[in-house]
Length: 280
Image (tube, rainbow, N blue to C red; front, side, top):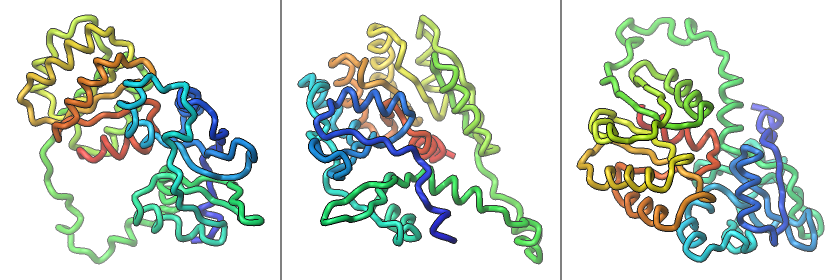
């Protein structure tokens, strides 16, 4: 595979280290990206860190409790960085897998300073692999016994997705088509949540987008989740910028249960796939 195949394709967006956390989160949302490159407050091209969705989720409780949205992003960015040069790009997949990182800056070093020229994301690698996966499957499987081509039987799973965002519902619906045994019902949220107890018991995978729900609705729903004895997987999608502190506390208390997963907006497409497709 050539070096060119792994050249960064994600948009490179950089901010100064004194940019507020709130402004950085809005940039992630508006640009539909999963990471921002952080540069020195004095030298814009001097790479000193990276701010990702992971940094946001890891620090969301502290930010809300102290109302630190106006604090500089340097306070919560990842400062200990792994980077590669253009000559090392072929090693990107191994490095990202080994150190469990989703964004890898590509740099050029000049006079001891690291000048960022791009960022490779897990989504870029996935897209590159898919673009190059042009094998003739008939030839690949020729000569194999017929029974080797029969996929193992898997139990169908019923997944329910509740969101007032039609684009989010469409994303979930499309991702479900990657499998033949995941049955997805993507629905809009209704004003009353009286049937949610039934949904908690019936759906083996439940994805609920809390955005655009009132504080009372969210509290009522989370109380139902807390009281539920279900062992089914529940994914709670929320916007940290609009979350009330008491609701945030309830969310993180619930996340102590292994079947409950938190997904903070703005989410990278790759992160959602990683979380959702894992159920397949």
